[in-house]
Image 1: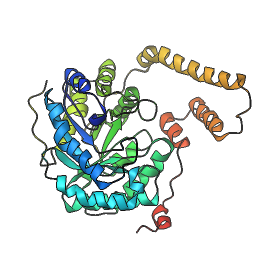
Image 2: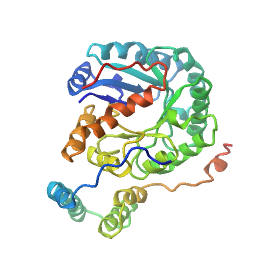
Image 3: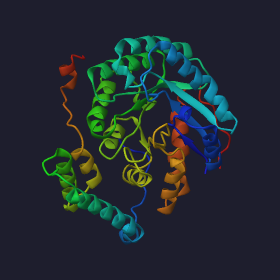
Image 4: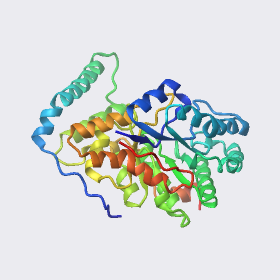
Length: 271
Length: 91
């Protein structure tokens, strides 16, 4: 089955992984800007990273017939450095006209600090001023509940934000309902140990339905599985769910959400 | 906000139990073995917050209330303060 991975960090994966993903049915992916495993020291480091995301990765993906899209920001972890963050936010518009940019992301919170919140609000303002969609990172483990509610507070307090153009990622059992009830899109991240398993993601689909709900692998340089979406497809098939339902979650919903960006291109007819 | 997509039909409980019994059995054994490992180890962790959270989590599994996964998640979460923005001076 053709599918789209709406959140995967391909800069940290090999070209072999692109080939494997294509063989598994991946036809498109979006790659939010994120933490590199260490804090970068200057705006030039981010400029090079954004060149990698907008120029190099699309070419690697295209070798295997995969459309590569991206989102730009300084991630929540490095946002603790407010002055560097502001330099990067000022630089981001240089890249917004690149043909694979879908919006601003993955912005959010990490440890739910004042500095992270300040930079989150400034990213949201940037997205609104430039008419960009937003992709959001919610914190890990014990910080997720508190951080997700803080993020939702900030988003709903800005009347300029169109909730149908915001994807809140890494939802789990204790955060998904409020995200959906408030009119945002929600993404379940299939990630070993710290996030959600395919079985638990299938449970959430059964409980909440498929509207405004997607799944992603978030495959990166940590312990993660870039082929996690095919695992979810298998789990849903095993439970006897229809092809239409599965396709809605792994293909149609990402298409519907991404289509709100002028840079998203129609995909070839899918299987 | 109301959903336009209908939820999938509920599955058969006996079928789920049959399919998932060995998976659940394995997870209970892993948890039991972790507790045994702690018992065999030097020192005591009974007063540590992490050990108390595991105990409270296991109690949620044993009670007769629904939404166990959500309640375990909330147990393991930091509390949310609705006044956080005022406390941070962010308006």
